[in-house]
Length: 184
Image (cartoon, rainbow, N blue to C red; front, side):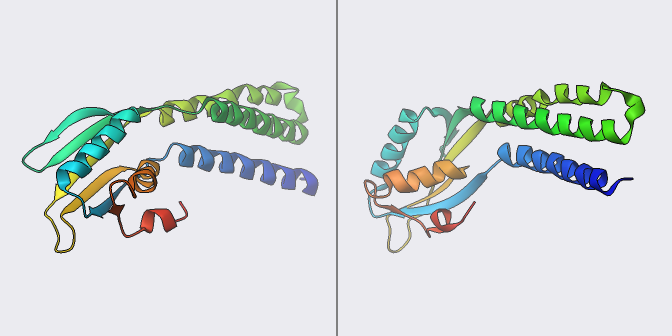
């Protein structure tokens, strides 16, 4: 096998593997849990969080009064520009693989180039996996010595960061700061 063709095949295969990992990461569930404290009364903090979540499109989906839990649900939509980009990358990658296969096996004719038609499957796969219903959960914990309100928040990482950034000052919320300092 020609060294140029083998290295091109290797690079094309690596590009396909990279696309697969990107698809997996783009649709990965990023649910996490964080404890936040506030010096404000629990009713004020819960009311502020409730209004903020409803304004962002979350819908109250019940809870458990005995465990002091409130649940919200929201539909997460996929990004159309990202789906188009992934479809394009998939088509270019599949066409590249088809060209390499055509060079390696010339008896196949131009049939390997039809692999480019598989490209839009990357965008469809992303859209199918990324669109889902997410849950945001608030649980009131027993008060600690220094704070009358302690909450355990469970939800998407980006939503928890938004809570910390947007409601940190108005509701005097503070956590260990791990969400804002972690890279991903």
